[in-house]
Image 1 (cartoon, rainbow, N blue to C red):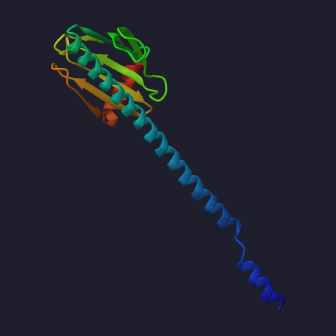
Image 2 (image 1 turned 60 degrees about the vertical axis):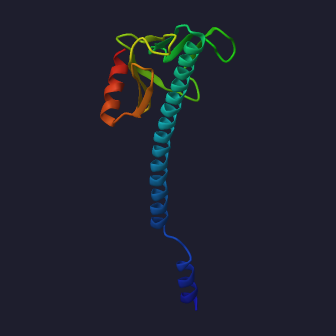
Image 3 (image 1 turned 30 degrees about the horizontal axis):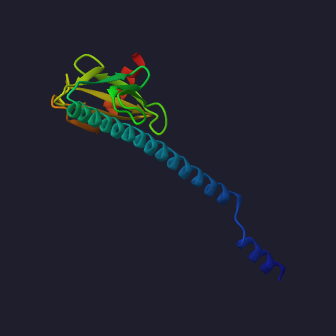
Length: 174
């Protein structure tokens, strides 16, 4: 009878090996989840920054057309910010609106901004930019590129891993 009781107790418990295997599996799944979360967060950041810049460029273009005057947009890659010069801002009319993309919810770096060899351009009174160009945002290992054509239309796309590596290298050089 003692042997049967001992046998029943042994079947109701886990061995140390089984517990270690379960803990290792949970640890591996946690690492995968954290990695994917970081990737998703970086993707969200560059996507949100891209939407913000597109919205601001659309506003600057509309103000230029509505007021029949030139509106200048100045990107500053060193500080990862840009300024809408003499445009209607959220707080004051006819003031400069300075947007810092390093702050939440964006948290991105402007890797490059090139509009005809300069980081600044203007929309004329018809809403046409003084030059076409592009800019690249980085967050972690995620990058997004905005392209503006000669008519002022803006398109956006995520960069490939190779393009992102090149953008990271270019940002490190500045």
